Image (cartoon, rainbow over all chains, first blue to last red; front, side, top):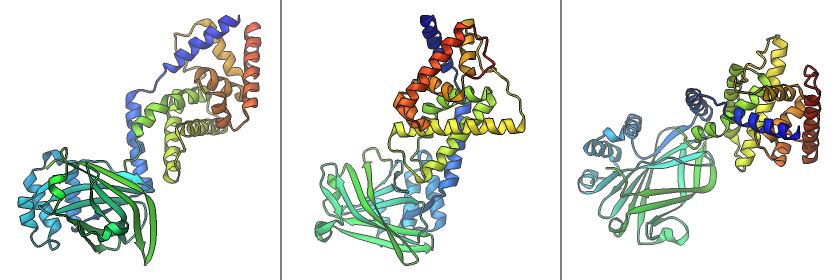
Length: 233
Length: 166
């Protein structure tokens, strides 16, 4: 009796666990969840760069259609993005190395961040950040940031005394497009950068979000790894 | 778009378990499927402001929500006087003795049935069931023992009292 009972339980368990939802149902559910999640979070797109909204849209399209985009077109786009920020940007684009970075957002504390483009010239690196946040704000700054190469050598740091190092300097530009859209560009000048860099690791420990003169500091650790050999141009 | 959450993985991990538990309560495939969706929508609301401590926390939370939503659905069904399609879910490949046992399990009081199913069918540990149902581990063990005893008693008397809640 007891043995039959145990056997029946075992068989029932096996048969019930074989009852499965079909794949189509699961796929539909996944899509529904993505839509609901997107509605709930209402993330706002803030691009740390200097370009108008039309260009932001174009940039997002480029991300989606990256495999179809030619390097020249990206070059034209980035020329527009950098317009009025670097006087010789066309020359840098022509002679430098522009790489599109294919990566997922790194999310911490409601702030999602990634790098869309890396542009090398002989002595500069331009990083195009793309940040998403749940917070309402009209300005933002990246603080406690350290960037290293594959050999753990510091390419840039604004932490402590490193900030004053003459090994490199940074041109960190902010320009408001409207009250909810922040534009920043980061240009790092370091004469030793390009030749040493195969990959870069960006570690940001603090982000400041500002709204109506009030500043909110968000402390966490956003770590972005970029393998430049794999980046597309 | 924030892509922190791997919804596909989440669905693959939990949807069938939620479905089985929902079938146990609702006895109807469509209702159970609706409930699976409802659980995951609750999940989205929850993760908006909260993080799970670990996978176990997440799993227990999901099962607890599943059970609560099932209970609510049953109440709602009773109020709207809908009729369940009892045993619609039982596949043809169950033997007579297995069918008999399933009927007996189904006739247990809910507090015994859910403990029994989570432990024997879904392989949850005592401590996990304790966390899901918010009762002590001793209480889980007691309910399990009583569920087993009641089932054996029912089987001994040939399921004659299957209409009665044990």
